[in-house]
Length: 83
Image (cartoon, rainbow, N blue to C red; front, top):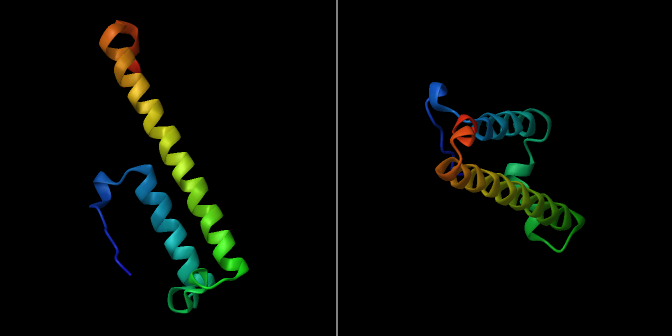
């Protein structure tokens, strides 16, 4: 599995969330890293795709907010405090 780590002082909340989730999975369900059941026609595949869909929605929502705040900062001096 590819693991990309950032220096601790530069980690964003998303890095920290990913690291905690990886730690929990390794502690509670280490078998998932070998079994790869999400590749089979199984309930695990459905849950994997649902989780991936939710992650994409979250990322798109957050990047959309960042884009809107950046655009507002260009036209409204008060919005600069949000960036």
